[in-house]
Image (cartoon, rainbow, N blue to C red; front, side, top):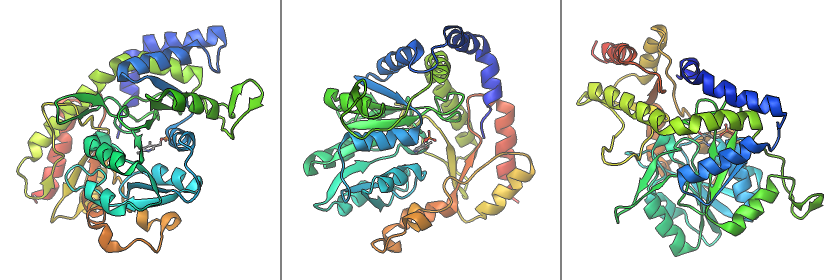
Length: 372
Ligand SMILES: *Cc1c(COP(=O)(O)O)cnc(C)c1O
């Protein structure tokens, strides 16, 4: 699905030099590279505080701990996403409230959020799924009306823009009260191991979170709150410093590949390609995900795999149907879109190194199956 080797070969000199500096100075933990990356990312995102941590799942958990959410508080999130989102809600003994998604952008449905709000609701967690920014303007409006926190799960959409009706744009992950991201190797900004970060514009919350990631310490060996140990290591920060200046070009390469894929599928009766907006960068294509209509999606997947084309189903099972998260409050009729999408979606290879020949081979193979 991704080609990390070709990408590394192009940036080897800078990345290797950056890693070598860490080795030469033996500043493996909380070294200057981590601080440098924090500053660089704050500037790139135009956000006041970036707090690096160990991975994207920790980032979500720590964001929720920072907000002081308490057992029993209801947290609304999307039924169609990676399990990490709901996992941390459950782990903190908060009550997950899964809701359906929108059929066009596959992100959390605004109407479904409104219907799910109760007096116990404390937060909404939109996920910018597959790289497309959720409708943050509507979500922030609802949150304000009901006095709720918004935690953006930005693991898949770093660098994407959210557009507002007054014409302004802000980076995904800088609009809610707090956000999380992941630097897992295959993410749009990936390191060479695990990594993550939390973003916020709130000074007090940033202070709280900086203590939580470090065993609840604000003064050395004074543990004021229950914390965790979650650090981005210096070698990963070195890789990220080398790659951050390339993020916009990486996202542009993904968008370019997406445009070429979509041009081929345009008008095909069995394919709904992702909608591409040309006036903003609201979709940075962490995944390029098609919906296959009135054709055998699973047989198409077999066909592509047999030809050596990697492809995957993100995600095959709605979260509300997962054993760990089943709940008698959920009714199947509350999730018509997710239940439909899990049967239709297929993600094609998407990364920064796709060339025209590869794209043609992939699209020809999809069409060969659908047109036979
Ligand atoms: C990848 C991902 C995460 C978790 O990130 P890790 O760094 O793997 O812990 C969380 N949410 C979403 C939507 C993701 O895609």
